[in-house]
Length: 72
Image (cartoon, rainbow, N blue to C red):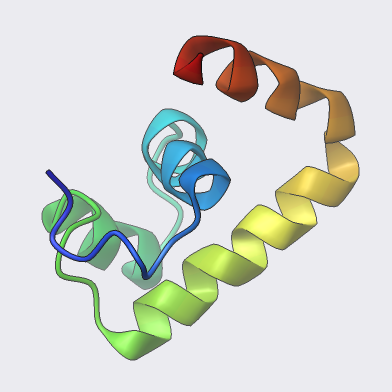
């Protein structure tokens, strides 16, 4: 169970674990988030992930389809 399920929407949480953390290391924010395995993030890390999700969603609008199919 997520520590605080209200911090991230379902799509943001799936992006964090299936897309963002699956990529190779990209810097200090990534390493800090990876070390925590996406749990117990501080405010700056949460804002960073939400921003990255927004950017990713604009570049890959059709990629969200796989998320909805598995949730059903």
